[in-house]
Image 1: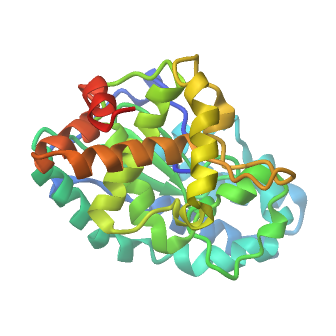
Image 2: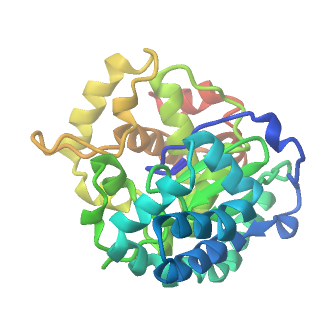
Image 3: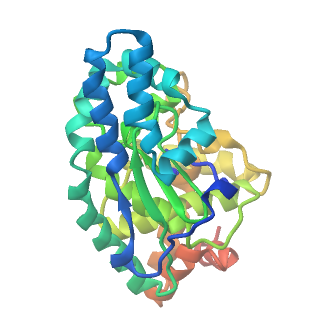
Length: 313
């Protein structure tokens, strides 16, 4: 993700998903939301189950056996089965109810997302787009991607301000779960990753990968999943963060710079690597004489050194 996005996105290449539906045309992007409907169909039948075995059969028949390629990818990655899904349903009753309406309204986010994708295509005509799958997972990852599949876990991307996050026990997941209103930003951030040429090996490269994707998503939508992080910043704190990051910039990727969970004792937010990358790209864009060329370089990261040199980093 998000990943994404304050998200845990894992790149997998699974032979199970060989058929490709990647497209270069924004209006040909496939949006798959049937898994969400199937989940709630199974959910609504559970109260009628006469036994535990019946409950497992409902989850299997109504949800898992009808899985899309996206849900199959998630199952392969997470080792999920009917038992594990049933346990999640029992442990998150209020949270699931709070997101139900949003998950069933995902189609309303299709046009805002397409609007952003069309803008991306205009800036970078060589853009290609994966097939999107909106599913309900087990509060583990907000998304996952392969060469042509973008899986979005709606249970972690369709929350509202009133959603009871206390039912999420993992502190990282609790912190990174996103609101429904930002779903288009989350998807665009991940779609930008499909355009990037840079394979990050160092902290500064990973900062450009994540911060660059978020900068472009913000440029396209005027929204950011990092707004809460921006709100916590002040010149003194940002200067301190930069001074700590600089000696680590060219070292191998340290996940602590990119995790959503910060250090509460030190009153330090998470995702600081994202922030650094965003600020670098922001400065590069502002200083660039050719704005369109600058945007294309941020999108592709084909010349990352030019971005760094263009900001004086």
